[in-house]
Length: 100
Image 1 (cartoon, one colour):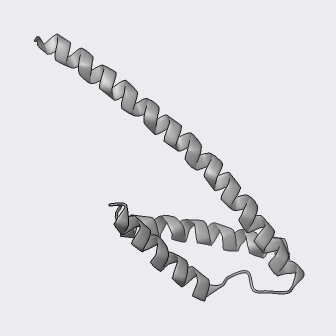
Image 2: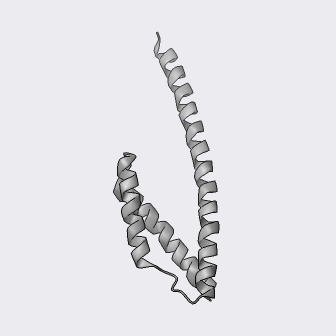
Image 3: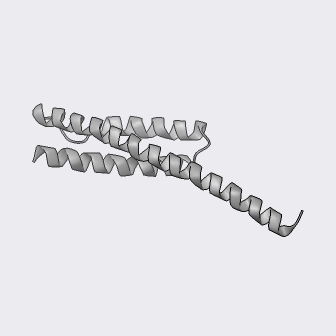
């Protein structure tokens, strides 16, 4: 087996892995779009009933839940928390915008 054969196999594996990553990225975008449709509806409901845009108790529960899910999935829980915090910040910003 030559170095050229190894390089060709490595290129094939790399291409396959990148294809999987591309598919996962597409799924993530679609899932995030669906999530934001739901949070948009929550924001409209909150605005209609004069509820605050943020719910710190729920956010705390969600962070703890996501950290546990991440740990169970062998994903860094710190990363998972940062990701959820980013989403929460965006949702709250959107909820505030809905309220006007």
